[in-house]
Length: 212
Image (cartoon, rainbow, N blue to C red; front, side, top):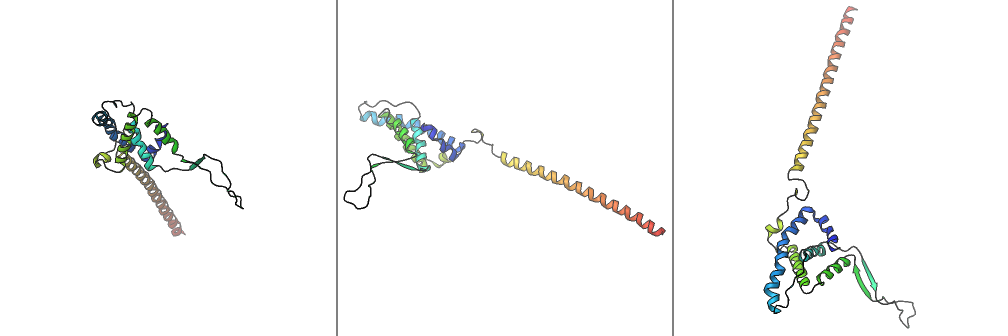
């Protein structure tokens, strides 16, 4: 469900940028969690922490960081935890706002992601934290600019190759130019024939005038 909700990022960025993001952050999100576990957490815990769950959890949370920073919420709703009560001793019938929890349309996505991060503690939380941190670093342009500016070629993700759009435009303009040229030559031939017929008509009329 969380991966399904991330489809809005691809629609916003386009397939090329989305694929470039995944391929760029894949090495970091794959290597950093086991390195942190082996070099930091395991020695500090005296080999008690020695497990990481399988799956692309870091990469998913790196994408979730972009979802959090880019996609605004559409609406809010409130779940009341108590019933509304009227104020005692007041002449007007006023009621107090019941206590409750406020959520947005994005809350379900965060709830599913938190369940994934807390499913197999502490390894799942480590993977989620690393992914979120890498995603924030990419968002704030902390990573090298060459790495962030790299893009997957358009033909890999099903887009047009570079130059195909201009080539198609050039061919269309050339076709329109040929069509206008053919129409222009046809019009000139028609005008020339009309002039020739008018000239012959005048000559015949002049002969009749001279005869009478």
